[in-house]
Amino acid sequence: MAGRVRDLEFLPEAAAINAEVAKLRARGVRTIVLVIHEGLATPTAPQWVAPLAIEETSGGLASVLRGLDGGIDVVIAGHTHKLNNLLVRLKDGTLTLVTQARTDGDAISVTELTIDRTTGATVAKTARVAPVWADSGPSPDKKVMRIVTEAKLGHVLTGLPGLPRVVTSGNFATPWPILQEIVRQMGQAVASS
Image (cartoon, rainbow, N blue to C red; front, side, top):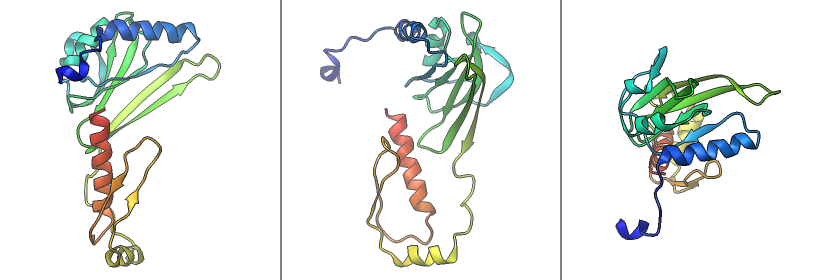
């Protein structure tokens, strides 16, 4: 590993983020979402009763959050694979939404922003983290089930640009294992990026 990064300089995250936020603000950007491969260890359940002070959180992202000047509307976190969905008050008093959806695509975080069209500023932000596979799914359509059962799958399924290609093979009684594999591999791709 050391050989692969020897020519790289690692800067303190908060200082680098603050510098980029300042540049974006200077260009008129008013809504900023930070995606970072760092996360919180606690809390691990949705916290919407009241915003938390940074001191009420732990994990590598907590130290980054402590150093942020503000101006970040949402932090999409990773790395610790813990469920996070909370508001944290930054140094400047602004509230930042921190969300992280756990590991291997077994949960997703759906984040919604309401942005003022005149100012470009975020006026509301929410997220919900939900498990992807709460049950085995609905019963498949009988025609679809017959086609899938009879087919020998060996197709490359592609998603949206930037998402991984997923190769599936074998016979499946329902399409759910295919979808589970796609979501699992997408989750692994996001978690390891």
